[in-house]
Length: 407
Image (cartoon, rainbow, N blue to C red; front, top):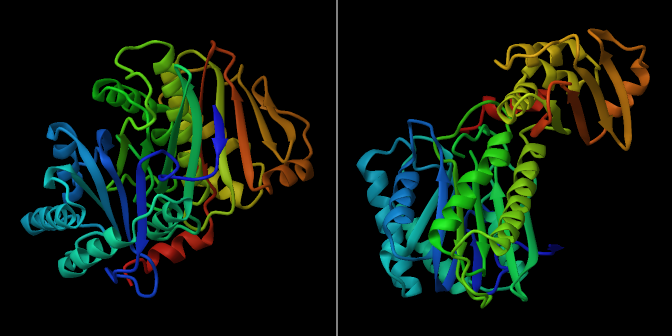
């Protein structure tokens, strides 16, 4: 596998665009298109929040029932959530506009929205935006980048990644983009993610790979503990690479899964590190746990702890908060056996062993905790399983951003 430049247009046959449509924002891009002239097989994972946006309900039906997918239309600023029957009607009108502009079937159009809950979409602007997107679409890396910028809300940076890998001697490409900065606590999976590939693969295996991989990628991040009404992760594969179709598990499928995992993990970490008001990516790695489930539970509990996140922001080696978060996670373990370390900037310091603090330097710990990427390593000394979770520190700016988000 080779990491390359690009995002959703890195793979053959995919086009993208990002335009200004004045959905809610002014003087910035706020609508995006991902498009393949060649029909795609599609897979998706969606929020488990009981309150689901209209676009989530629309996409679930398209992914499950439509024979092929050609495009995704995304808007930023308004979530189209809690909008009743009108919200669903607007999904249909968006698809109809895209079908006309791109000359594709209406049931091959996916839609996604992110932004304020409860507002109705200005459907006239949405439809006008679709026409602008269709006219602007291109298969360049720049077009993919414009699309990644257009889906941002409170994000401070756009988020893209792409790789190539070999399948039966054929070079296959996979790329992706996502947005997410606040209301991030995926559980499938506000976050939106879109992955494109020119691989030929069956819908069944595409779906299997995606649903298994989100468990250790997007579902292992958290910014604020809030699971959005709009969480959507879509993967499209159009087969343009020309490889023999991956229709059964084996070496080719494993290579595909490896690439998908890297794409999903990288995008997930980019979201965690760009949490609203964040100054650092906060990783917790649990090793030597009794079970995989325990490892995931323990790691997620630490990165979700508001007190621990605040300590990371303050560069304070308050390891008691970490022990506390591990203790209430629900996993059973012996606190007298585990060991804790801080890592960052190429340095590591042990802070806890045999039930008590080590004789560590507070100054050295503070330097490590001042890095843009900070890791808490937890050695459970209870087995062989491990897991990673990613979050961010909790700063004053998080409250500032969310105190007046609607305005």
